Amino acid sequence: MEYIIILGAFQALLALCLFIASRRRKPADSLLTWMLICIFTHLSIKFIIYAASGSILLKTAFNTFIDLAYGPLLWMYARKVKNDHYRPLQHWYLLLPTFAAAAIYTFITVKLISDPPGAVRWLSLYNEVTKYLILLSTTIFPLLCLQVSAQLPAFWKSEQQLIKKIAACFLLIPALWMITNIINALHALDDQTINTGIRIIAYSNMLVMCLFIIQYRLQAQALNNKASDEKQPAEPSDFPVPVILVEEKESLVLAVQPAGGDVVPRKSALTTLQREAIAVKLAVLMQEKKIYTDPELTLEKLSSLIKTPRHHLSEVLNQYLHQTFYQYINDHRMKEVLHLLDRCRQQEVTPNILSLAYDAGFNSKSSFNQYFKKTTGYTPTEYLKQPRKTESPRLAPNYINLQQSIQPH
Image 1: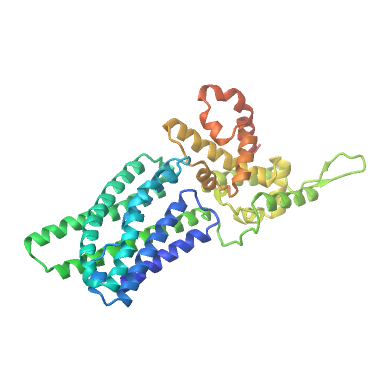
Image 2: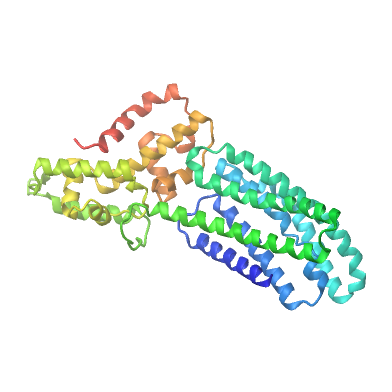
């Protein structure tokens, strides 16, 4: 059993490191982080007990208080995914049973060490109360989570699947309790065998939950890099800064400043047909592969993907499409975000706006908000509140510009 416990603790620690190391954490991910911390702490306590304690009571007859925290944390996570404006702290009282059980758990642990006979009565009462609290928590909250996940839009598919998988793992606990009662009624196995089997399944269940979370994190990371044919080093600073600098340098090459002060475009090295062919390749790559969702996309990476020299790509962007690389890519990102926001408004769903921005390729909240305001004239929250019949007069010019800017002439 010790091997299962330490393996589960290792998986929880690995998943925790993946979330901490990620530069693009969604707002709801903080609740997954807390859940992983709880799992790691839970299994670490159990490993210490099994490895260092000789008390059979501590090993086999002592419910861990952390079990009471899993259900509320998963429910808060589901609520946060569904609604970006949801604040988990408003339901802090759901964790009160966990804090109370933690205090009693500590008291009984000290009592078992100092006065084992006197702690037996306390331990029996504690286990009886926490058993039913854990059963309620791991039944009610997972069912509520499944209800919330069913209301999530299709573009939260990965989060929806994660919620369903973890909820199913938690529902296994009351199912085990029912099976145990049936076995006890039939007197098929002795209590020690039943207790050991249940604990092996419960700890394995935690290990499986950690694997589900690791899978979710790796899939999210793979989606961020799906457009990359080969691994590229990350830019050291925020996305807009290096790209603007690159484009400014490129613009200096493509334009000549004569004495009269007027900017004269440099003579093109490409024919009109060649320019159009590159522009079409770009449009196809954006529409079919959605390369703009890569938050670390650079001019060099894009030129490699379409197998076009960097200076030819820059020439097409600047002289044919009349946009910088930064403008071209962010226009596609904005179109994606606006499309998703419109779907949310039609379905009357309150989205996690920052998560939508990250999924579309933005990796800076401030740059996304600025670009959104510049494009639509509204903040994202204000945009969602606009009635569809009154938004057209103000947004029409921006939408037209946005559509024209991402299509080849």
